[in-house]
Image 1 (cartoon, helix red, strand yellow):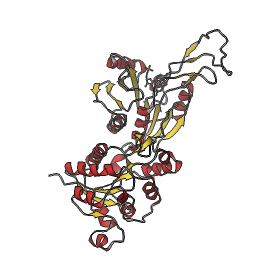
Image 2 (spheres, helix red, strand yellow):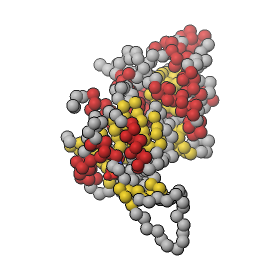
Image 3 (cartoon, protein in one colour):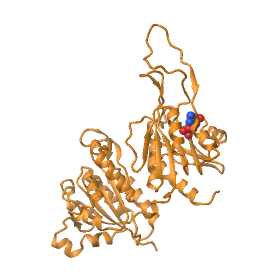
Image 4 (cartoon, helix red, strand yellow):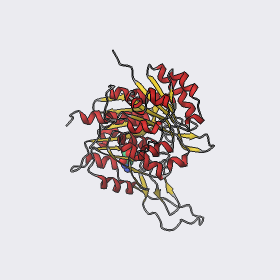
Length: 413
Ligand code: C5P
């Protein structure tokens, strides 16, 4: 008989708090017991009554309240839960978690817990990209705190960017997944289950490359880097020491990942070689196949003559890493972004480049794969083809990191 799981949901003070009401409903519908702590900031956005009604329980608010402490205090609140969820997690509560500050009921419960913690950050984009927040997040990630989001999109403050809280459905899925992974009410250590790749080094390439023609012009492609960044984030979440070599993108650095920025394919190649040896390599970058043979130091003048571009082949990073004799990583994964018969082309590429897995995806016009938030992929390896349904690039990252962890933790040598 399955034991009912219990979530302690901490609602802190952000406009996204309204979405937490839907999260409570989702969890109740999923048969998960839920108890809420509402911070003073959170109480400016949602009412105690709405949370109490939806959670069918008392809402806890005050660290020093005789009523709250008399019944059940911060120690019991965290002891009684299988998982602590902070949604929304503001920049402020994230900073307090990092520092170990416990000046209200929510932060005291978070400091007192030895249970897994999931946070769903939500804040203005500039607060999110601020070095202080990013550093706090990296430290929480290192400590094994589970993180979902934030998402990119329109914000309540009228701006656009990273910082929206993940949707309640996505948080619900993450919670269910964590319960599957921990599968015990007695999980004593924070997120051990998330560290399946601890001790492994992962190298990920991401984004496009820019191949200069002169100081102002370059050849590029439409890759946004989202898929590569999501894979790097997922590998780091699983405990891999992850280095991402990224071409130029507008994305913020994934949490817990060491990012090395490069411009051209040759720079990416050199940066990858410097990172060897590695256990896992995922080449998700859309590396330009060709570069200008003679890029100029001075801007090419418009003098009435249309210039002719002489191109030369770029090094193939994936082929090089797959075929390196002394330093071959245990698992090398490539991407085959194709139009038309994507799986056939991926099979051909798998054989030609000699990597272990090839991930085929369709980048035809209309698929929105390049630059979009979703992807549909087919994993091609020596055992056959695995077709994955359409999902977010983040979910593909998580699922791929799982597949990689399972592969490496099974003896394939
Ligand atoms: O040959 P094609 O560019 O289609 O192969 C795609 C795969 O090879 C991707 O995994 C990409 O990251 C990798 N690649 C590479 N270096 C190149 C070209 C492609 O690593 N110069």
